[in-house]
Length: 450
Image 1 (tube, rainbow, N blue to C red):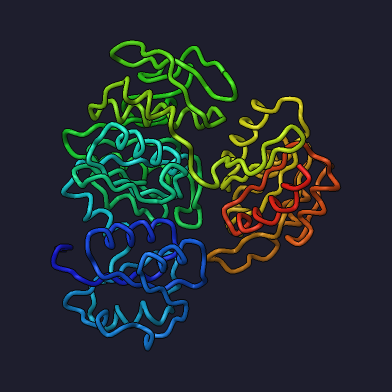
Image 2 (tube, rainbow, N blue to C red; image 1 turned 90 degrees about the vertical axis):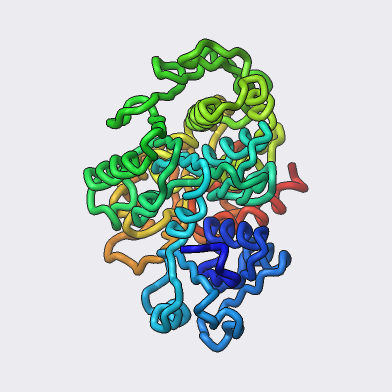
C-alpha cells in the first residue's frame, strides 16, 4: 500500500480512541479526512472543530463525492463495527481499499524505528510515558496513544516521523501486523476470551507477537512472564528495576537499577506500583533507544498522566474523587493498591460499571474478589459495547458473588445521592464503558460543598 499516493481517507468508527489518533495523523500530513461514528462524543467534536467532517448516520448517501473515488480513497475501519454496516459493506462491495486500523498502523510504522507496547494491562499509560520521554529528549517521534494525554491534551504526539511509538493491541490479534524494533510486553493475564477462547491461545498469540520483532530488535518483558527478553520490574532482580522507593509529597522518588549501573533520584507523580512498573519499562526502552538518563529524569518528573487513568477530579481534605478506566480484575486490584497506599486510613467507595457481558461472565469470580476489597461497592448495569446480552449474565448476578456486604446495584441517576449517603472520603468511578460521562455531574455536585 502506498499511503503517499492516497489523498482521501474515510474512517468508519472515527470516534474510537485509536481511530481518531490515526485521523489526526493523516490530517497533519495533508490528507483529506472524513468519517462516521455511531454517536457524538468529545472526540468527534474535537475532530469536527479541527476540520474533519464526521457523520452519525449509516447512510451511503451522506458520503461526499470525493470519498467515492476508489482510486485515491482509503477506507479504515475498526473491528468493533458490525458486519451489516451499510457504509462498510458499500466500500467493500465496490472495490475500495478497505483496511483495519491495525493494518494501516503497521504500514505507517514499517518505514520507521518502531517502539511497540503490548500487554493486557498498562499499554496506554506506558505508551504515553514513552512517547512523552522521547519527545522531551527531542527525538523526532510520532506516538499513537490509546488515551488522551494530560501533557498534550491529545492521543497523538507529533514531533517528527523517524520514530513511532504505538500500542500493540492484542484484541482481534491486531498487533501481529506490526514489526517493531523494540517491543515490551507488560502483562499476559487472560482477557478477550470472546476472541481467544482460553488463556493458552492468548499466550500463544503474545509469543507470536514477540516473533514479529525485527531480526536485530529487542524484547522487554515484565519479570515473571513466560517469554525470554530483557526483564523489568519494581524492587526485584530484573535487568531494569526501581530501587529505594519512597513517597515524598504524594510522588514516588526512586533509583533505577540498569544493566549498566544505578541511576538515582527519579520522580514520578502517578500513584500505584502498577504505574511505577509502567514508568520503569518506558525508561528502559527510551534509554535503550539512546536517550540520556539526566534528560529522562526531567521528562519523567513532568509526566502528568492519561485521562481516565487514576485521574483526580476532586482532591481536598474532606473528599477525594478519582476516575479510572479499569475494566479487568487485575486492573481493579491495581487501582485498589494505589488508593490504599495513598489513603491508608480513609473509607473508599468504588462505583463500578462492568464492560461486556462476556468479560463479566469469564471473570465473575475475579471481579467479585477485587471489588470486595473496597469499603463499599456500587454496581451499575453492564455496558454492552459490541455485544448482545448473555442469558444469566447481569450486574445483579455479579453483585451476588461479592462477599463484602456493603454493596448495592444502582442506576446512573442515583450516583450522586448514593455518594452523599455513604459519606466516603475517597470515591472511585471505575470502568471502560460510558461511566466516564458521569464524572462531570459528580464533580459539579461536590465541588461547591468541598
